[in-house]
Image 1 (cartoon, rainbow, N blue to C red):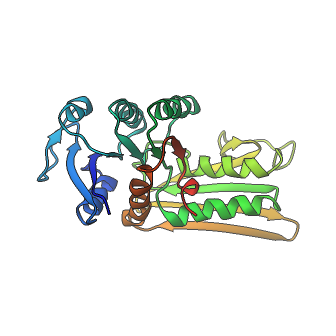
Image 2 (cartoon, rainbow, N blue to C red):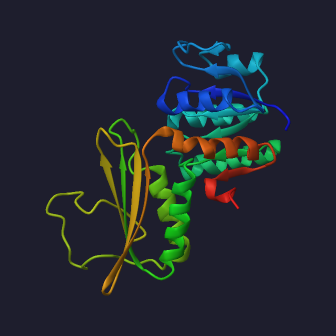
Length: 256
């Protein structure tokens, strides 16, 4: 298989460290540089504080970005402008940002993958939830993450709700006269669905989608107990992005 040259942004983070190990241990991947805003990554490859500085010197095929929403957007846009294909695990992009990045990717005929969740099991959970939503109109999403996560609800929860929305008629759930005695008790609302975010130390990434109907409930749940669980999706994304000429949002769109 042809060698794929990779640059990683965010190599000192929890996900970034796993991505470094993945690239170093995949024979057809080659780690040629990393981008770290402190310049403190201790690796046997060049370390750059600035993405423009990096791409003026290095010529990677793929940028794996595992930073923050604000930095991730800037890195994705910059990578495309330099002819580098981004694989992005950062959530929190707005619809306008995604549309802008898609237009840029297509104008450059470059692949770009942005995945709210790289765990293949989580993608299956979202797809199964979408299937169930055709038959269950009442649904609530509960997502649980570590207490250092910056965005709420999670990108996975939002993506799940978007996928359910595609097949479910809009429905205002709960009693029509219900009242929150404490604001926020019913969570966020999207198309009548409620999304609840839990943030606690000890958690990694977990989500359950609960459906209710007369006399029955259905719960679809996925749990990631460590960050290695995300690396199979990162590997597939790096391999797949080389053959794309547009932006793909969501790992489910590249899995058979």
